Length: 305
Image (cartoon, rainbow, N blue to C red; front, side, top):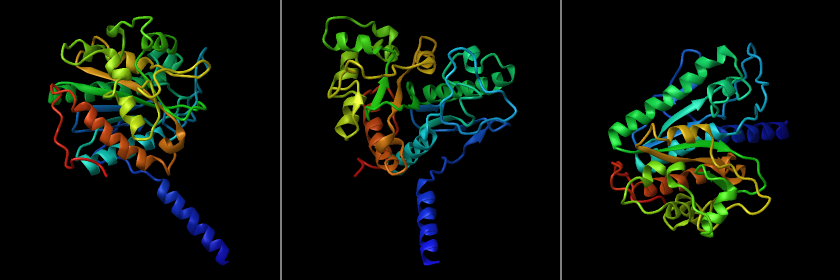
């Protein structure tokens, strides 16, 4: 009996520790397919593939090329990031989270591929993207510019963040080695680099002030970065998808950002999430503050200990 009680207590503690509460003041569409959490800083994070609710009355997507795998614990990671930013910096990002599974709708594909032509899924697809539009418009109105991150999870052997700037792995290596040029306008930092006072694309991919370099310095390997500039031969890498291309494109001139494909160990797993979120909160706030034209709120703390 004592053994049973002890095991039950251990299980209860593990479940409680694994829980991550959503940010306050969130709202959902009428069906509960999409959640929107308002923010108060120039950062919008979308989570297209973290939903776990499979709609039983909807046929699973099975069109050609359809991917239906869930990005495990990315929703929880986004919530943890929001909590860390609130606790240590007194601000929260805007979050848009898809609650239904990728079997029902893929929120990082254009509508025809994302719904596999199912008209019933057109409404949740449109709602998700309308929430992103709402968040970006408000953030730009309040802060002048906005950083947009599309948050994913990968299952590749390399335990590192894959940062997608819409540059393929085949182009990253020659660009780093300066044997081939990349058109800045075609990257997810194109809107940022239109300004004359921000430096070059190389600075923000491989330089000491880049997001990847700053995260790696915190103990979270990232590619591209100064420490790991490009994927090596045979290493898999995601360079950004529909959402990144759409929301950092010419129709959103005051938005720039990237896709994050996060590894599981020490990042998305329940034990690692809190520490990662703290590191992320410090890096992302200091990263945005490098741009004086972004009206970044003042942190409640000088730094995170």
